[in-house]
Amino acid sequence: MIRPTLGAFAAQLSIAKLKETRPNLCSPECIKTEILSGLTVALALVPEAVAFSFVAGVHPLVGLYAAFMVGLITAVFGGRAGMISGATGALAVVMVALVAKHGVEYLFATVVLMGILQLLAGIFHLGKFIRLVPHPVMLGFVNGLAIVIFLAQLSQFQIAGPDGARVWMTGWPLALMLGLVALTMFIIWVMPKITSALPAPLAGIAVVAALVIFFGIDVPRVGDLASIKGGLPQFHIPMVPLTPETLKIIFPYALILAAIGLIESLLTLNLIGEITGKGGGASRECAAQGLANVVTGFFGGMGGCAMIGQSMINVKSGGRTRLSGISAALFLLSFILFASGLIEQIPLAALVGVMFMVVVGTFAWQSLTILRRIPLTDALVMILVTIVTVMSDLAIAVVVGVIVSALAFAWNNATHIHATSRTNDEGAKIYQIEGPLFFGSVEGFGAIFNPAEDPDLVIVDFMNSRVADQSALQAIEALARKYEAVGKTLQLRHLTHDCHKLLNRAGQLMVDSDDDPHYGVAVDYSIRTGALGSGH
Figure 1 (cartoon, rainbow, N blue to C red):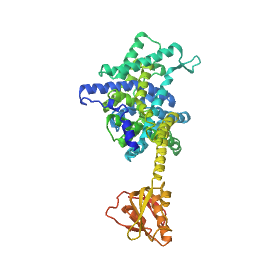
Figure 2 (cartoon, one colour; figure 1 turned 60 degrees about the horizontal axis):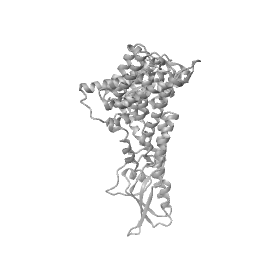
Figure 3 (cartoon, rainbow, N blue to C red; figure 1 turned 60 degrees about the vertical axis):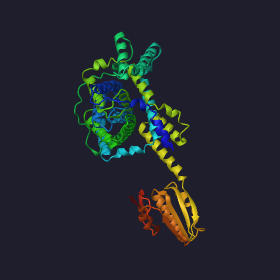
Figure 4 (tube, rainbow, N blue to C red; figure 1 turned 135 degrees about the vertical axis):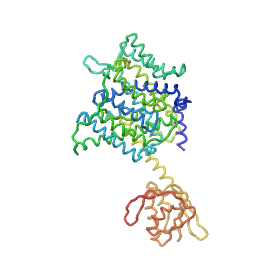
């Protein structure tokens, strides 16, 4: 009952506005749109990459190189056109402890190992398990990440104090900053109503930057964060000893980074897929992220994953093909090599305005209105994932959301098992089981029967039930033993051939029917050894 409600809600997440008719992908108009969209994304990537470098405790070029290389490789080989990848805060907060304790060379080695683990996830098609993430978790992820993006922009409203410490703006500087942010947001809002010749975020950045530079307005600029001038990334083998001790140090970090990177990338892939109307590509995205991080680790980058904020900027600016992602990466490299002086003059207020509009467009505002219309469990999961995403990190939030959703599902289904009973012409009692039989419902299943008072022949019909796991098989075995102990016969009907084989090992009396179901039981159960094996 919940799926149609949430599915209808998902369709309202501004998707209709983004699924607009596009010109031929090879037309000059489309190429222009893709390239301009890439330029917009590249401008937004600069302060993000620099900021995340500071969080991780590395040089800004380490983050910029990661944004370029990860962005380029995933744009070419990734599972979804239109997605943008680069250095992210979710990974940076994990890296900071490693860099502080062991140095940046260990970070490069960790990024290489992280990439290898992600490649293996792609090779073994582990990306398909993202389908286990329920929709309330997805909504909580979107809302939580929107809040995280908003909070991350607040640091741009700080300036260096007299003692060098960061302090909040006050007075005229704060008013000027807020005014430029508001102007950028207004331009982005009004631009589509005037013309679609230029991506709205790019227009906002260009107009505000022109005003600030022309009038010499004293506001924080990109260059105040750090210089982005540099050369081409150079091949560099991480200078760490190739010993078991090194592997012991980097493997836990690599495993956590790989998991966080894949979770964020695959959830972003699903979100962009809803917007662009395309599905699949999860395993390919895993492999592309892995390849990108392996290469990045050997070229002095801090690694990365998909970025929901920049991906939303891209698709809202019209980017739908791989050209936009490739353009963004190449523009970013050109900024580093040739245009650092110009890019460093862009006011941070313009980029903050762009990201605030991303927050407005990303947050699922209507999720606030449906909280009373969906099951309480789904509402609580949505809120829980949002809170944990903000307070902790994305990976923990998703895992917590999936676990809570699974436990809630198991509990609800555990209470659904029941039976109707009747006596046939031969005097046998027939129990018609209703509901799934699994570990959560075996206690209720056992309470249905009364071996002491039932007739000599009892038939249990599973036509409207489903035997799901080893606990269910064990419950059936235990029921048979109870009837055998009082000298009565138990017949089992409408079980799968899988169940026939497994339960016949204990000598149960099966009744074959032409309409036996054909689903597979999750595990193979042996009454003699209690061993678990693979079922059909």
